[in-house]
Image 1 (cartoon, rainbow, N blue to C red):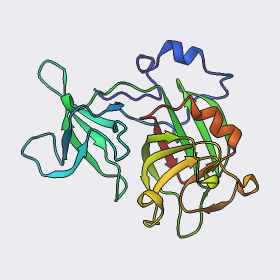
Image 2: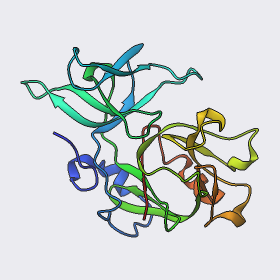
Image 3: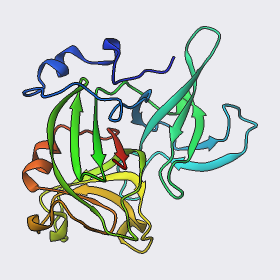
Length: 237
C-alpha cells in the first residue's frame, strides 16, 4: 500500500517529529507529496522496466554506485506486493532526461525505507519550505532559473550532497537533485542543484541556469537535516 507521507502518522518517526524546531504550519495540499520511501540500490546493476515484470521493456539500467563511487540512491513512488503482502516491485523516479520518467525494479534490488521530510520549491513566489513530520520547520526566499532556463517542475529527490570547494557560486553547501535543467552543457549535464550563493543580493530573482539558490544561512540549516533520498517537490506557484 502506498504511503502518503504528508498525512498518516504511521509514516512519521515520532522521535524526528518531536525534534522539529518551532513548527510553523501544517502541510498544505500543494506542498503534499506521495512516495513510498527511498534508499540505496543493493544490486551491482538493476534494470528499470516499463511494468512490474521481467518481460517488460527496459527503460534504463541503474548501477549500484555513482561515477564518484558513492552509493546510488533511489526514490520509490509506487509498489506492487506479492500474495503475502510483501513488496515485490518498486516503481522508481528515474533521474535523467526527460524529467519525470519512472521505472519498475525488483524490490530485492533496493532498500526502501519511509521518509518523514521533504523540500518544496515554489518557483513562482520564489520561496522554499522544508517539512518534517508534516510541519514546516524552515522557509525562506530563493532564486530560480532565468527565462529560457526555468527550474523544472516535478517531484525529484536528493542524489548527492557536498561542500563546494572550487565553485564559489554554489555558496556554503549544495544538494544535487535528480532533476535536469534545459541547459544540457552545464556541469553534470544540467543537473538541478539546491545550493547556497555568493551573491545574496540576487535571492528573490530568476537568474540561475535552472538551479535553486538559497541564502547560505538556510542551506547550512538544511545541510544536516536533508539526507540522501529526500524528496524535492518543485511547483509553479
